[in-house]
Length: 210
Image (cartoon, rainbow, N blue to C red; front, top):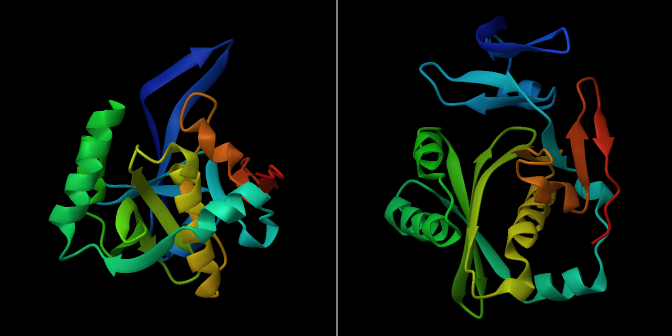
């Protein structure tokens, strides 16, 4: 891999120098990179950055009775994003607007990735959520989740990720990766059962039961 250190946005705090590190893959696969904490960012060409990446280790998932009851009410289908873009994009855009999330630009950039698939979640034949992901060789890489806000008791944000993790298990793949989480950036991911995060050298478990 070709390593790039970007100092244009660098700064110093308490005599410690901070900068961003990126790589452009050479012989490495997607699986090789995400398993070492790298995450893809769409640029010409696609480059990868280091972060406190998260993954769901389905072998460590322990669900509460409440969560199991919620999951029993839902069904999902896996579809190719290509061909249903208008349907999926409209659902996501409405979700972003209703939640007042400024994510349309990132969503559209992510649409440039190849091999995007969609998990369509339904309750009583009504669509209540979508999750986009990349279907890799050894793992799956979750991208974005949107859901119907009229069903708060279903906790569809976390539940959708758990459903996608179950699909990953059924594929006999290793883990579902779901990008990063920090205290001020998608902190809810640290509440997902089976969550592990990349601390720089190894994957660390949060041991969440929910």
